[in-house]
Image 1 (cartoon, one colour):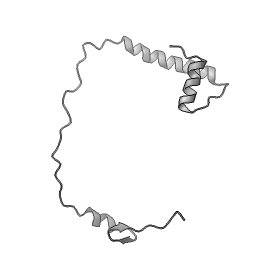
Image 2 (cartoon, helix red, strand yellow):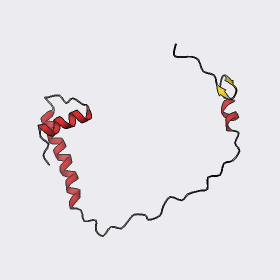
Image 3 (cartoon, one colour):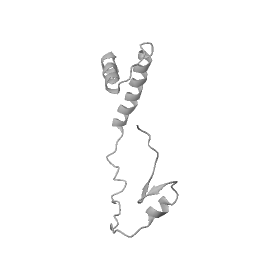
Image 4 (cartoon, one colour):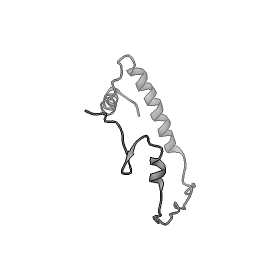
Amino acid sequence: MQVDDALLGKLEKLSMIKIDSKKKENFKAELSQIIAKMESLQEVDTSKVSEISSQKTPMREDIPHASNITQSVLQHAPETQDNYFIVPKIIG
């Protein structure tokens, strides 16, 4: 696939990036090289490759348990009230 001015214009619009006109030719050449490398991957024979892993992520039972993390976190706060952090007002 060759990157032309039309494709580069679409990419600029989609990415909302303005490419300097002095750099466009170099940019098109580099993009063409990248796309050519990606297209070469289509030639790789993967028919004899099996799944890397057929195992699924082991799941654990979701059992709630009592925790006192609130108190251990709040004890480090400079100021608290009713189990909440007290912070300075930043928006007037």
